[in-house]
Length: 68
Image (cartoon, one colour):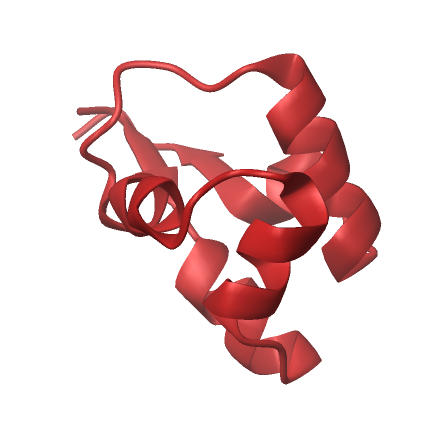
């Protein structure tokens, strides 16, 4: 897939845990895990908004386009 998920990097950079993120966003840890591993087909803008709010970042900090 040409979209790379950089959620793990941002969580580490901000010294946050995925459990905290899941609670803030209002989704399960299992869904956060699916997002982290890139095994999702899409993500709701509301979810992306909450993730960016929690991590104090921009969507581009979490998603990266790669032609490969």
